[in-house]
Image 1: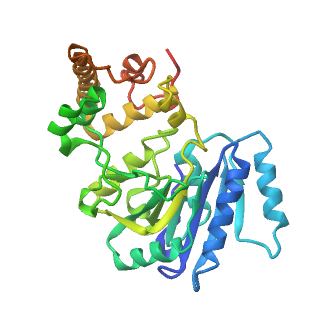
Image 2: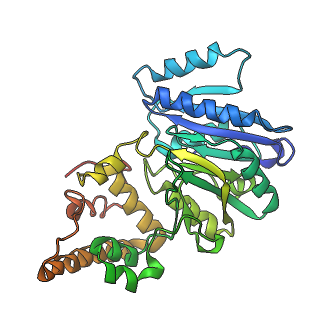
Length: 335
């Protein structure tokens, strides 16, 4: 694993920032993302900021497109392109960027996101106000300004029962375990926040380590927040810092889920890994059985003449991907 440089190698506190962006076949989106970052950074004074774009072995010409755009900027911009030798996934890509450009703070940012004006001023002000917090979660929006749910409770067997049942009375009964939080949750409520856009404090990374590269995509942010919370680091929501996230632009899972198609095996491999790390093998078994119980409850809706909420294709089987080797193949294979 790649570990960030020690705190002694950093510039003075609150005066350095690295923005980490992964490109995987999203050349135009990545450039638009970088533009929005540079535009907002131009509003700051006294901050040494760099943007690091890691190309995760796109092999589609997008790395060359980004490199040409960087080279063409006059005056030069503080943007560096790193070409990963492999598709190292979400954790691996961001770990490369963080290791390459040590700073007091790191903004982990999806390539399918753009920042609203005043983003950094609000986020860094919150970081100065809350020195014991390690993660700062901005307001993530749709293009029309409506909020996206980006802060959650941690997944548990009870939340899997809710998800499987997808039935109002079950959700109401188990509401304290329901994962999604409202658009403006209180800090004490937040278990984890989406890493589509989040600010991380260097001291926290130095103590708990980089993101777990045993995850390819999905659940790595959940696990990192789990690890941070267990080590005593808080997550602070910062609604004044706003970012637009074009969901699904950097990966297919959300589009597949909306269409109720089969999700990639790496999604379930990540789910298996998280439940095992957070709750043990017994917790994984309980979560899977709770989901199946939820589906059985959902079927009872037929007795009331109501439709059964659909689930993703083949999910009943795919939940068990890597169940015998929970910390194994991070990409897995389809059955």
